[in-house]
Length: 250
Image (cartoon, rainbow, N blue to C red):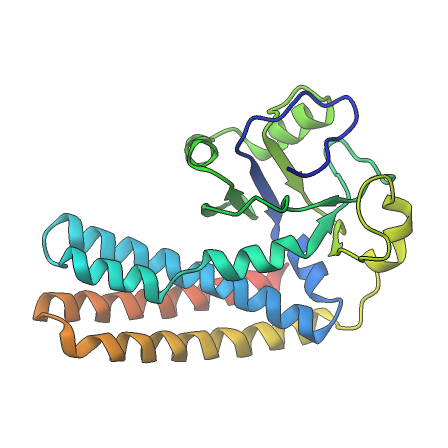
């Protein structure tokens, strides 16, 4: 588990981590390499969610064989890439704000098991119980932020916004070192427009890779499964078009 904020009650086993899209874009501005990594991880998430929705629904109504559903789940696995990124990233607490701290986004034994997006945030959960809480959470985010800032909980929730994310520097580490990360947090080398360009390139490449993966599975599909795949690919393209428009507005 990540280090605890002083005075914070013990966390339950699973955690929720809500990260504002602007914070991720600020992280991406650090370098072209980071921008590529962030864009690729988020693209993988969006694709996996669309495919999971279509394929799971197809399995539920009997149009997709369970074996094919498993093949798609393996082909479009998203957790490994995201965990690799998140284990390398730390954050300065926002709610309550504490500039003296810099904490790892994920503990060494943590991973993300579920994700969603809402109110301008990407939301993540680290176990099934936290995932249930995440999907059942209908509290307005400003209300959650006020509660967290007053140290009234929820105890399992970390919310991150603003310029708060940076790669963990092994020479500095994490903990009571927040002020030493001040230069890293604003060490931009890319403009917003350059990040948008990289993201567009990654999105286009991700769509092509998705099409290629589906094509490799296509010879083994029934007519119903093939139709679901066509619908799924159309949804993927629409999802990326909408996501790109939103990113341009951040």
